[in-house]
Length: 556
Ligand SMILES: *Cc1c(COP(=O)(O)O)cnc(C)c1O
Image (tube, rainbow, N blue to C red; front, side):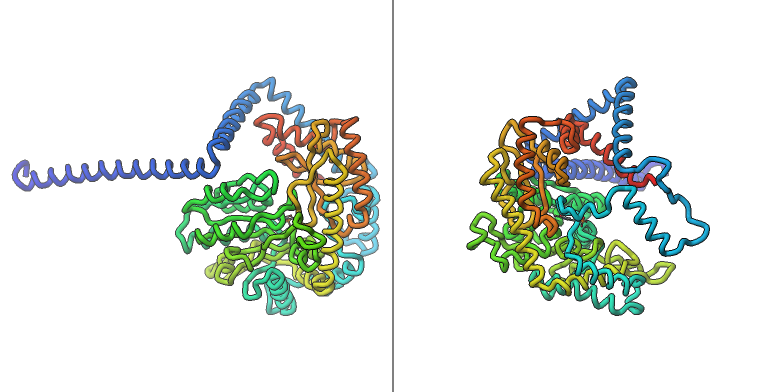
């Protein structure tokens, strides 16, 4: 069969095949190039040309500096500095000395209850006052609902300390309480027919929402390279969730005056891979609220999710209107609250922290969805597990039923009138602080017009570094937060700070004068912020220090 029509036909077939193969290869190449081009185009479109160039420049500078730091001489210096910083952190956190008792292995025989309590008292004394937070000079951190409420929560703990909602047949009351907590929150956010679950905190609520939208978008829209769009002021939990769930994040700058996310930039960042938009009511850094109505319109026109982070605003923002603090006589137009809950078209989920201004025990939060169809994408279901068919609503498996009982108890104890009263007190304190800064501390200005409990202030006087002000406040016993872009300091008012408003203002005025006339340059806020901004590798260095800090937490 060396020649003849059959051989000709085979040859033709082979050459056709190879032509086919060649064009398939070319097509594949074009496909890959197109995908890469689309990716780059969408990235640049979302970031804008200026930000893209600046990010690229940062990236190059970082590479160059990192290369330079690899030189042996530089490396030694960096190592020495880092070791010093690490020791500093350790000195601050871990008590030293032979007199400190350490319990590094299980005692052979169990200890009597009295010994245990005595040992805790000893630790409190050795390590500095446990009741330190009671002086109230804190931003956020302790959301105390009063001693009587505390007692109710502790009794609920005691009663349900062994319960676990993973076994609703064994603990039916816990199941009922969790369902009721979710129902109460859904009503508070005007979606009685919606759905939700409890979680261990705001971070878990947010991470679960991110997972829900990822799985929803994959199942319903076939999206395999998901992206989400968040305001620069969104809580770090969104980044954390995106990192865990492998989702690309576009962080959108804020309007410098209103501190709301720039809607034009949000619109530009939306593409067919977008699964989720985010807005806050209110945000952590400066306590302002995004334009939820406009974000909702964008989300619904693109058929994507809109999560409203109400973690910090929960049990405060829903009561502002009733408290007469949203515009009107007492609020004026300045602190006017805009719609933020499920009544806004396009809002598909809301995270609400019971463990902040709900005064529930730490470790409790609620994630809510517009409907139960969306909620099911949050679930984890494994019908074929060797250990038996397995289903759990959120990240945890076993969960503390005691926390659910404590949360239920706190909400019943407070009632909506209790929360209304605490909203009045707390927001009243925040408004007094904001108004006083605006009226009588000319060196500072308030970021945006925060409607709820958080006030952030920055400097408008070149002679005053606001982080110096923050450090001067720490010397006066205040634990405040430093924030960046712009450098500012914030306080989240709580019931503990309400009686201290006058002290805060007096201390703030003194601190501004101190920062102006005798800046120390040595405080923690100045040091950390200075390091972060020092060069392109500043953030990596801060990252190293943060890692050392976390390591230190586990030094027994
Ligand atoms: C506190 C907070 C969260 C969640 O934080 P957790 O510490 O995990 O409860 C989320 N968003 C905002 C705006 C917050 O203030």
